[in-house]
Image (cartoon, rainbow, N blue to C red; front, side):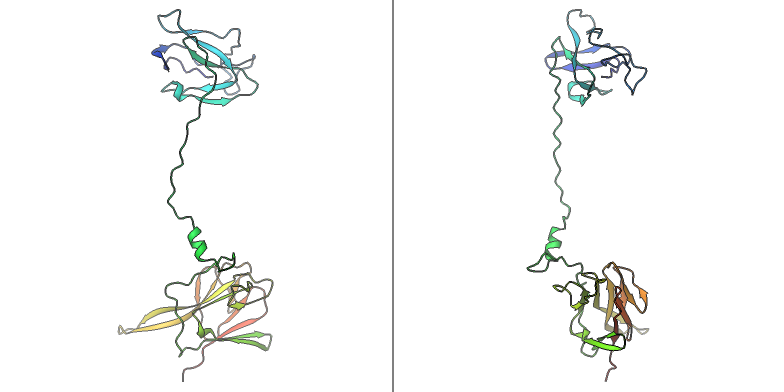
Amino acid sequence: MIDRGTAPVHAPGAATANVDIGPPRLLLKGEDAHPRDPEAEVHTDEDAPTVHHEGDEETGVQLQPIHQEVLLRDDDVTLQARAVHHQEGAKLYQVAFNGEAGDGTVEAPIVKEKPNFGPSGLLAKESNTVAGTKIVLKYNEPPEARKPPASQAWRMYIFKGDDLVDTVPLHTRSCWLIGREAAVADLLVEHPSTSKQHAVIQFRHSVKVNEFGDRTNVVRPYLLDLESANGTELNGERLEGSRYFEVRDKDMMRVGLSEREYVFMLPPSE
């Protein structure tokens, strides 16, 4: 216990009094000073002083040994302001008022948890979960998502070496999820270097304005890597994750470490 000098002391059933407890000192069992205050004065059970109220020799403040350390606030030394810390191997003292020793227990203040009205993410997670599974989709289509018009029949040609493996009619939908997870992938890539949800081909609507102010609606394909482990390449350059890159006619995509090449083609309009 570290005494702070003269300070007002309040106790249940006792009048307020100024107690002169002298210069700062530390009460410990043994002969060694407290490690945090090598200059502190040391007292044991036998020589622990009794501090009296001013002008009252019979009623005083007794120091009783307990196994707790009592710290008092500088500005308001009250019972309510005490902070009790367990101190193993040391015998410290608790102040008892009017000659009555306390039991050494101090109830910790109850801290009520304030309500948190921030988004938990559970609703979004639920809406992104595939029905009948625990798979959470990493991607949602943006508001400008559109299926390309019939005049823009985008196709994807898949090559392995010089051999044409497959053809995908991209214009039939607005979004294609590429990955190794068969339950959610629109374009399944089973190479082990491919992430479960690897990348997305997204058709997006925009309005093009020429120099005369004429507005034209345009739907173009974009490629977006879903921060996959082994990346996505477009024309030999690895894409930055979570960013749209416009795809043009005859562009070539590679997924992960797979040797297959995915070529985007837009047939000429008739």
